Image 1 (cartoon, rainbow, N blue to C red):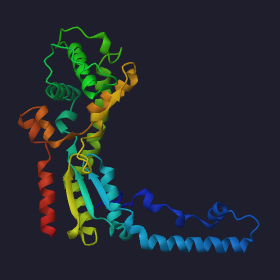
Image 2 (image 1 turned 60 degrees about the vertical axis):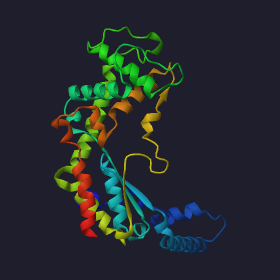
Image 3 (image 1 turned 90 degrees about the vertical axis):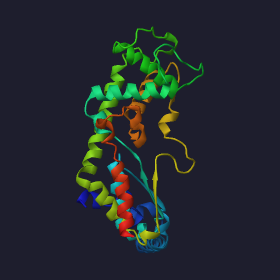
Image 4 (image 1 turned 180 degrees about the horizontal axis):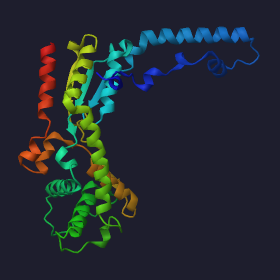
Length: 293
């Protein structure tokens, strides 16, 4: 594994035990006490903290999540696995099943086409009506339905008039697409660097195998909140009708999110779409874990 992957997380490197005596004495600030007494108090406190750390650090991390679209989560997991005090408390490792699609990230034209295809499918949009539930604040369905209509109109795909009551922004729809594409492309580039040449799988497997008694741990593959089976937070995005900036931010957040593996069906059925869905990696993770067992 690379040096970047081996580096322990920042929060593991810092703490009370690392503070120099001068700073610790200022924190204690025992007025009127002789200098030697204050230093004795500092030494006792440091020793007590060290003992508490040694006996309880394994309680700090019981479950950790690795997200293929966020390489920093893999670095954090590797840092935890290499710290024996933290690693011995881990009981479950989650591997989140969503990713940035290379075809979508390859050009803003592909990105725009994918966004329209996905949301026309999700909304069963036919370009003939201004759907709105009449409730406030606007939710994802409201905002994305009108955004699709507006984008369709700008691209010349829709001659239907826009409903002033649901004007998402006085600006054109394309700035939101451009901003979302920039964020999506940045996410893909980061993901691609982590997954290239099998580095992600190798690093994940090595870290998992480094956990004490790793064969007794749970490896959970998931695509939603495993506590309550709720979908991703973006589905709950809301904004007031008059909050143009909030609506723009919500649309950008929805468009720039990584997709679930099965969501490729919204984009298309061709080989250029499905051959990039990283199903093999999920299988390889399970196979590799089985071989280790």
